[in-house]
Length: 195
Image 1 (cartoon, rainbow, N blue to C red):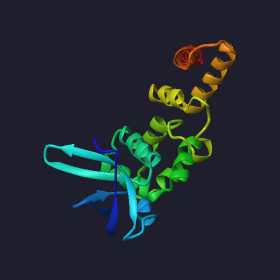
Image 2 (tube, helix red, strand yellow):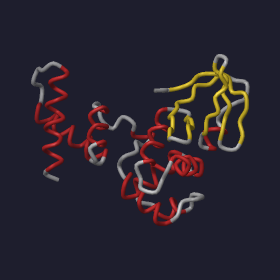
Image 3 (cartoon, helix red, strand yellow):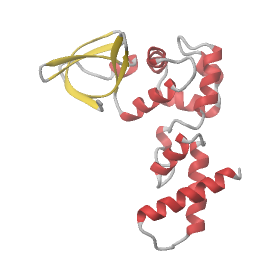
Image 4 (cartoon, one colour):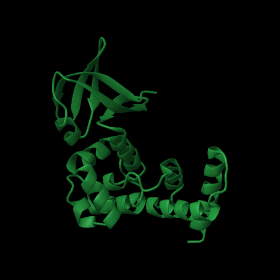
């Protein structure tokens, strides 16, 4: 529905910013550390997600698509809603969160305000390998395929490895790009199924 909103930042406070876009001023809930990176009276683009229930509508915003993707992954964890996800993201940097999930650092996750041991454990189980580290955003030349495999529940690094192996298997066979991607995807699933 809404991918992003661009406008002038009129005010910020707590976990919300007020963004003037045209003649509409939007109230957008954001992680605290995202808000700190915004300057008043400057134009900015905020990537959004709309929460809608029978009794409530609330707009959530993020500095970039990666932050929004992290938020959406957090929502998949049992016991974490939009408000909790924003609080978690505001209490830990993106890089620290990715590192803690990748290394299984339960103590680091538990140190995030509002995040207890059980929820931290659920996060580790649900999200390990699902968030792309900033140092590893290009772990494969086929990032869309890596993402598709991650969406199916496969670990990102294993998915990238499987695609690299599939690339070797297929070799230099001349195929149109779409057919090549389908074949790579199929071979990667075969490889991952044998793991």
